[in-house]
Amino acid sequence: MTQIMGTEAIEIKKANKIVTVLKFMKNNPTGIIGLLLVVTTILCAIFAPYIAPYDPGAASLGHRLDLPKWLDDTGKSEYLLGGDQVGRDLLSRIIYGARISLLVGICGVIISLVLGTFLGIVSGYFGKWMDDLIMRLAEVQMGLPFILLAIVIMSVFGTGIEKIIIILGLTYWVSFARLIRGEILALKEQEYIQAAKAIGGTHFKIIIKHILPNVASSILVLATMCIAEFILLEASLTFLGLGVEPTVPSWGGMLADSRNYMTSAWWISVFPGVAIMLTVLGFNLLGDWLRDRLDPNMKV
Image (cartoon, rainbow, N blue to C red; front, side):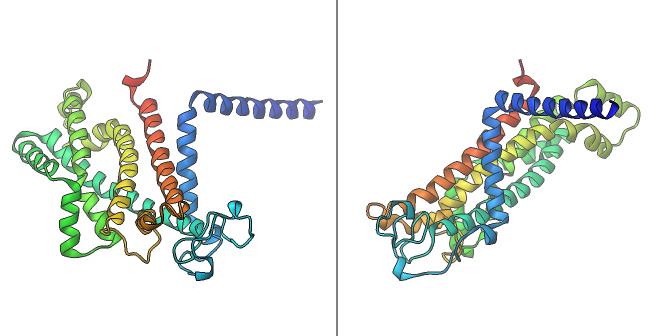
């Protein structure tokens, strides 16, 4: 009897968990969609060698500009999403292209986040001449058009994924610095911060224990949004010939290669464009959901 009751209790708990998950999905549809899109992109990037049906760099002139397999009535095409201008499998190249986009987006955000957080804390917490210096530097940085700056740097030092990451990281620190500075200016006047100073708390301890935990949610939301923007910027630079090398599968490079075939082979440009759109949409939806969940001012 006791065993039967225990089994029923376990089943009830499982049912309650399922109901909780379903309610969460119903109340947060955009967040779930964004999370699914982001997770799918990350999984494709991590397991690309196991997911991609073909070698992304293997050319086969016999399959040049092949139609997507599901549109080919002749049965000649072997590629699910068709072949490109030199007969490479478009699906495999899109899967491998996720690696470049996520690498640029995540690494660029990490550089911007670390640099911007440090300068924002220095500017907002310590203030005085350091605040003036950092904010004037930020204003100068914001006055420089990113594309123009990237073109100049790439023209001098050459192209490459590491250069794109560095340029993005050293350009977008301003967004993090200004956001954190603004929040710290309000936080440092709070009573618990003043109390921590009054009992002899060091600046380092106050920043680590009281300041950073209170700005972490805003940093996370901005970082998510910036990843989406960085993916678009990488694709734009590569499309202009200033991004990654042509031999590396990337979504921007595929769009650049498809310019002369947009009317005769639409799939070469459409599917990489859809991959960019869905990935950027996923990060933006996830960022919006995180903002709604983490920002108390957004809650009713």
